[in-house]
Length: 220
Image: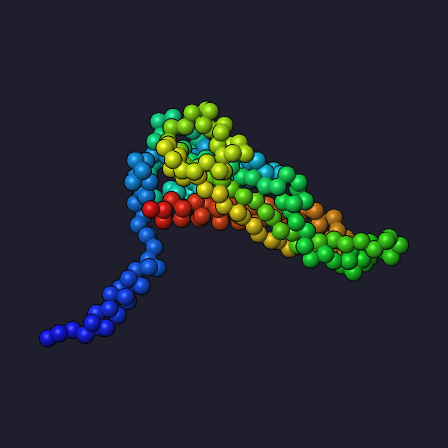
């Protein structure tokens, strides 16, 4: 019996279409295809205008990559590891460009009793947008000179080649709401907003770790 050619074309079209959205989800070590069975993850470098971001970025990345069976991870720089994962957190030079104030509010309207009526009208931000970028490099047995070059301004532009397996750059952004209290509660405004910024940095670190995992898992 002869099959209709249109039916055959439709059949194979459906097969290929269904495969197009497939994502590789195997938990085995995806770096093995590059000859990497052991990976060192030293503390991420902080080249940003924000303090205390390295530890959370390093911790979240280590935690997610530890889910790959067959990949031996080391914290710090283990000279015996097959490769090194370098993370460099960057931002704009000015803090005001890294922490962008948004949704300006009239301060007197938000806290009339604490500010009073005699001060000139001024504005306070209702939210802050945090903007960072992350450079991630996986390199085999780097020298000190190669490490310095990768951390320089030229580093993000160096394509993967030779010992460099990955050299990717991610943009990271998240917004948090700022607190403003009236009367006695004004004393805790700074503490509350500092805590919100810290939680935002931790959230960005978790997002970055997921992007690093996907970069490694789905790169073919």
